[in-house]
Length: 82
Image 1 (cartoon, helix red, strand yellow):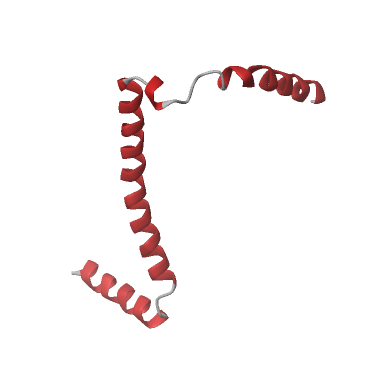
Image 2: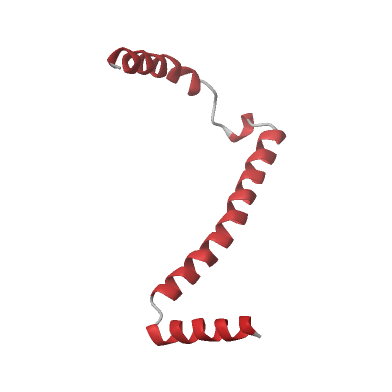
């Protein structure tokens, strides 16, 4: 196990310099890279909106009074029986 971890550490340290060799200037990025980053940002925002809505409804239900939750359950059961 120690040999595997050492080998992994050596491989990561040895290849870390190559990861930072590319420039980070915006002028060096081509139009495809800018398009990819814009698509990535759009994807993150589109996933963030439903996540926030779901989280908000979870928080709202957790902190709702027990009588409100009980009434909602009873109302749901009566509508499903019809």
